Every structure is written in structure tokens, then in C-alpha cells.
Length: 524
Image 1: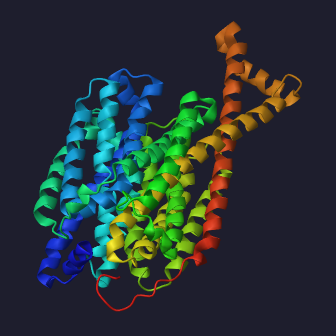
Image 2: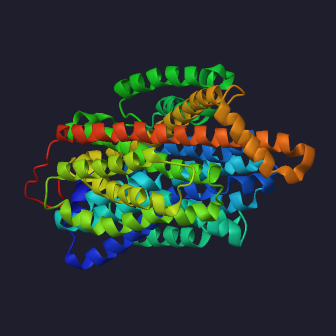
């Protein structure tokens, strides 16, 4: 009740405080941008970090995995903490912790230190993301939503997209340490600005006395294990790997205990009541698939450009920047349209753009580069903005203020889990189809094949300068060509699967109810 009253009071403040509120909110949005950006900015330069810390290939993946596991636990927990500590102090603590851990990551001298610091960075920084979403829909009146909602939608999608570009530039120009050092000055600004300016609600410290520690343990076991299995499964033969099998069992047992605890606890660590709202439930499912489109394609394009085209991190970033530019230009238009037309039409259009873009890439060849990927990337950027903003509005924009903080954590969790499931699905399909196409090509490229023998002879003659080694070099070159062709065909299959998935979302758009806004502030 106190939370509801404080949020209502925030809306009734005089117009003179609107500028202060908007600037405070912008500072929070900037903090969220840093937290989301930090995932992709580091992923583009893992090989440099690996060399700098003398880590093995197995160890370096934990620089990302530890961050994601810790973040996925904090995101739903932030709803409870925001009610207990208030928006101001949770955000200040999250931003301060994120900044301190960024500094420690830059000073890490071993892979073990880096993994610990990255886990703490993900856990502490994860509180900023859902807090911004909740604030956007609780403190601003309905007439401000076309300005505010595109802003958070743009940041949530733009940050992962431009991450490889920024990461490539920083690593090439300076060193991998600057991937973390770049957070420090902006982080301190966000900490002090939010501590001084944010006063959207009041804390309810009494909630801390009823904190459900068992619920937190079960949730951490459930979500942490799920994230680990999805991250490591595709590259380690899933349940054939002992660690993945054990974590899958831990996750399954913890999930049962967590949901039982949520239903029984007087003050559950995560309140699932928001799922009783049809639009929130369907919107969360859409957000899940949107996470596949956001993180999956941000992963797929660079993977193709690195493996097949041999691009550096900087070249990949420059190629990927097109999607970010398309998002930036589309966000204001989407913000205006969402208040004028049926948001379900926008969602349908957005996923149609996604589907058309991925369908175009099913014709992928080993020679595709910037110009061939230009239109698909533009369609992806436009589709993301046109779909995400109305999904956010329908899911969160009509919930009661008292449910917003918990609901925001759940909503953002669904997008992150969608990204994790999407990456696992993409890697699994990619590896399986690569093996299949490789086997089929090997059936045709053998000594009984006249065309294959003629091609090998031609390559051997071209490499005649190598003398007696020409035969071996030609065979090695032909084998490499076969592997590349099989991999390109596998990429094409993955894009086809994503096309079907996005088409299904277009058909499912009418399942959401068009929100009917009654008079009143805040849009609730």
C-alpha cells in the first residue's frame, strides 16, 4: 500500500518537477545502458582477455557465463529489493557495485579473479535493468509514454547491437582493460546523480525482516543452473557432460522447490501474480522470443563474419552497426505510432520484418559481406523497435502500480532467458546441420567423383610451385572449402528456423488484448 501511494504521489507532483524527474530518469537509463552493453562489449574481445590472463579456452568462457548466471538471479530479485530499499537506493547500490567491480575486472591478474569479479558485476549491475522499466511506467503520465518508452526500448536493444563495435574499437586502440575502465567515470556520475535526484518512492525496510532466504537459494539454484546448462550445453554434448547433467538435476529440483516456496511463503522473493494478467503473460512470451531475435542474431551475424569471412572484431562491429542505426532512426517513429494505432498491428509488422530479414539470409553464400547483409540488418533493426515498444507497453503499461516492480523483473527475465534459449538452440542446430551437410558433401567429394578429381587436379597444378607438397596442399585446400560450404549451409538452415519462429509470432499477435486506457495519470 505504501508503495502504491508513493507512486501515486510521484505522479501528482507539480509540473516544475518534471524536468528534474526526466533528468533523473535519463541518468538511470544511462546506467541500464552500461549494464546491458557490458555483456556484448566483452564478448567481442574474449580472445584478447584470454591471452592477457593466460587462460585456457574452457576457462575464458566463464568470463561471460559467470556474469550471465549472476545477472539472471538478480533481475527477478530486484522487484523485492526495490520495494524494500526504494528505487533510489537499490539503483545507487547497483550502479556503485557495478562500477567498483568494473575497476576490479580491469585490475584482475588471473582468470579466477576475473570470474569472481564478473559474477559480482553481473549480480550487482543486474538490478539496474528492471528498475528502469518499472520507473518508466510508474512515474510518468500517459502523455509522456511516447517519449519515455522508446527510450528504454532503444537502450535495451541498441546496447547489445553496438557492443561488438565499441568492444572492437577499445581493444584495437587501447587494450582489453579499457572494456572495464570505460565504465568508471560514467558509473560514478550515475551513482551521484541518482542518489541526489531520484526520489520516486519510499523504502519499506520492514520487508527485509520477512526476506525469504530459502526462496532466494532455490531461485538461484533454478535460474543459475538453467543459464549454465543453456550456455555450456551446445558445446559440451549436453547431458553427455557430467557437469551439465548434474546442474540439470540441481536446476530441476530447485525449480520445483522454488515454485512451491513462492506459493507458500508469506512474502515470496518473487511475486508471480502478474502472470494472472493475460496481456502480461502473452507479452512475456513475446519478450522471450524477442530475446531470441535480439541476442541470437547479434550472435549469428558476427559468428558468420568471423568464421567464414575472417573478419576482425573491429570489422564485425562496423558491419553490425547498420542494425543499431536502423533502431535509432525507428525508435521515435515507433513511439509516435504506438499511441495512434493498434499495438498488435505494430507487433505483427515488427515480427514480419524480422521474418523477411532472416528469410533473405537463407540464400547466404561464403561471399556475403556488408552489402548483402545491409537490408536484412535494416529489417532487423526496424523490426526490433516496432515490436519491442508495443510489447513493453501492453505488458507493463496497464498493470497496477503495486505490481510493476515485480512484473518488470519477470518481464526482463523472460527476455534474457529467451536470449539464452535462443543461443542454445542456434548452436545446437548449427552444429548438427553442419555435421549433416559435411557428411553429405563428403559423399560427393571422393575419388569416385569425376568432378571432384578434376577440381583437385586443377588445384594441384595451380599450386605447382610447392613441388612435391602440391598434392597435400591441394587436398587440404579442398577439404577447407568443403567445410566452409557445409558451414554456410548450416547457417542458412538456422536462419530458416528463425524465419518460421518469427512467422508464428506474427500469427500469435492477436492473442494479446488491445489495452483500453481509462482516464487518469500514469497510464494505469
